[in-house]
Image (cartoon, rainbow, N blue to C red):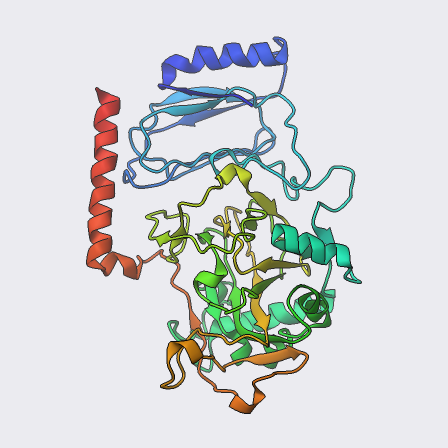
Length: 446
């Protein structure tokens, strides 16, 4: 696929000529017209272009920085969704010259982010009806464990029953109302507030297993322990759960590694991402960089100034590109397992309605200390966080007991601003970013 980067309306003839060349001059292909207006949006906004639908379906245009477009009409072949993101870019328009040609995708792969071509839900899956590479079903085989070791992730397809998924959804609704007031950072829902509105308030609740028996039992489903005991150890402990609700419009999380936040001494951390809804490119599924776990390096992090993502920091300076990543689209009831060193992210939920709910539990080998949060006055070398739940095997350190330390709380979604903006260093970085963006605009206008 070729991309024309060109100044605005004068390049439309070039785009049309390229379309003619690619289609053999067949101008009877269905097309839609879009009137691109110039909205008044802050320069730091991200470009989210053209969500395409069938002919005669309205197109959506969100968050286009001012000066990026002059009013212009374009003809674009419908049926695909394409997007482009730029941060502080020059006022150029990206013409997609090959939108009318078939797009060849390898199994489980899309061209991400700068040119995310979505062929509808599960468009990344093979067209012959088979499961993508890295997707397995029970019973869990050695092949699955080998794939995990080499790539840093695997998917257990249809791991949970419909009844188990529904039970988790019902408890999601219950905890989002916070009627007992046990969740920090969110008010109890007023009785007049609908269940949907109560859930829309929440991006993520940390430690839901502290709130209900349903989420506690979900730490040790057989489908989970079958995999965990093959990819971690016969002895497995859990230290964290997170319930992502992620309503339409909610942000994703930038590139990161989970061991940035939960350090183990033996690199055994694994996440188990349990899909409660179908997770697609459109509604914000996971994207992973296969094999990025292998070297065992934790890459540096920074605040990203990117409104697609929540307030968690972004990993950078790693040798992979966004184009190396693959989407992990999964059906409700499936589980994505991934290594704590695997680089992964999610993009915003761009669906017009609905949620992308997922329960994410974190596990590690019971043989390792967990130097996460100091519970006592011991030195850091001997720190072993003991707010854990054993889910398989034996605990070699059972003599230490268990300490109830962690409390349920909500994660900041950044839609009201991030705490980092209050930090003097982050204010300096923000000013530098604004200065750089202004310089780019001046250079473009010259």
